[in-house]
Amino acid sequence: MKKYIFISLLAVLSFCFTGCREEAERKFHAKTLDLTIMQKDWQFDDAAMRYYYHFSVPELTEYVYNYGNFAICREYNVGTKDAYQVALPESIYQTDTLTDGSVAYYTQHIDYAAGIHWVEITLTNSDYFYPSQKPETMFFRLQIMY
Image 1 (tube, one colour):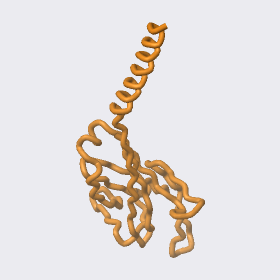
Image 2: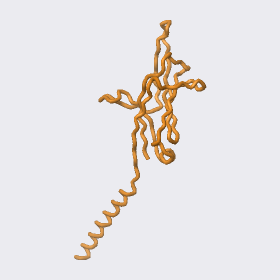
Image 3: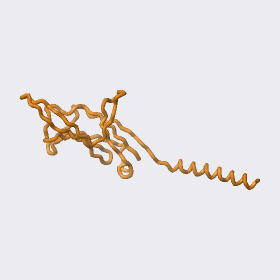
Image 4: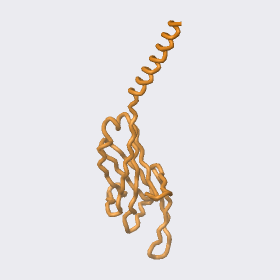
């Protein structure tokens, strides 16, 4: 009888230590950063013929860059119950009415590049057709997992 109690106790203790060890070995982290580009802040790159905005992101460390994963989504209807996200790259079909009354059709392509401590959002219109005003204010979410 003592033998069975001892074996049962040993089994329970080994289970507890195994569970604790697994918990201690988990190193998963996740962060979500909200990134906003105000309409006035978009910059135009004359050589690449596109708009861009460069964010400083200290959370995107060398470790995260090399061993983690990150993604950026554009967020619509921010702060409402109807909010939703679209993963980048995103292509949006647009129209613009010209001064002569004709309609121009083009595709707006939004993408990103990322490096250690930075993210750059780019916006390129097909046929390099750009209306007279800068792109609208846009909201993005950077999700980092490591």
